[in-house]
Length: 282
Ligand SMILES: Nc1ncnc2c1ncn2[C@@H]1O[C@H](COP(=O)(O)OP(=O)(O)OP(=O)(O)O)[C@@H](O)[C@H]1O
Image (cartoon, rainbow, N blue to C red; front, top):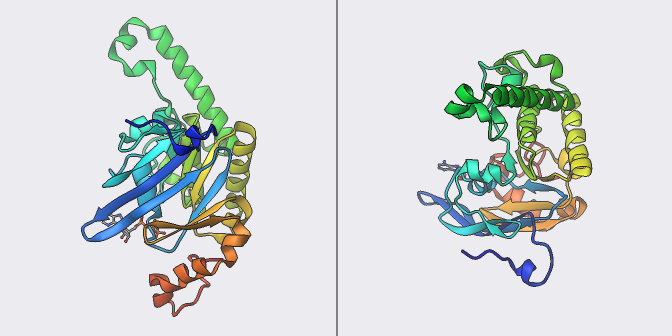
């Protein structure tokens, strides 16, 4: 397996995430059609593009939920292509889903405690022979989960069933779950969808804080252009399964290729070329 990227050869630090020529077909449809991009450490990188551009498929291929047909995924220059999701997760790459995947019949706190990696209590013999260790670790995980809940402002709901949270609160819970894993890179799939303005502001503040204070890198798919323009730099645009362009938000906003990608696609056809909905370019 090749372990070094071109950047390493040049002496520079490799990007935290690099995708090279990724391809994925569903039947005759090329969801990813030679997609290449990279995400630099310490950035909040936006990933935008019209419906069906392949953004979520890209997340699925990076995080091991789909096996790409070809191409490579590297983190810090190490090849992680086609690793199963739990091994990608152990590499510090965590994700959220467009539709939150909470365990609805468990409490908010339990949802977080589940995520903590390498729990001693998961090993049968530890429960019998090392009960003190299991209890101590469980206490630590609970304390950590409460800290994370405080951070996302859900501590008061720790004993509530996760299924009873509002859509916005579920998004915060998704973010909280990634934080339990002490991630290096968080992939957020439409964090603002279905979230009211107040919670969205809170979410944006949290993301900015985590990048600044904890050095966490973010790659986020988002259709809310206000949020993208405010939060992300750089912004990568995908179209038809490929990287179309990348730049500062204001450059992307005015780039004719981006407008063309949005207006020329399914959305443009359906909407008569209008651009006022949530999938508008800018
Ligand atoms: N499991 C699947 N089976 C078949 N087709 C799929 C599957 N997942 C995605 N696709 C198709 O692949 C294409 C890319 O979909 P994807 O969800 O990655 O786009 P997207 O850019 O995330 O779109 P959106 O912004 O609407 O979420 C679409 O045409 C979609 O219908």
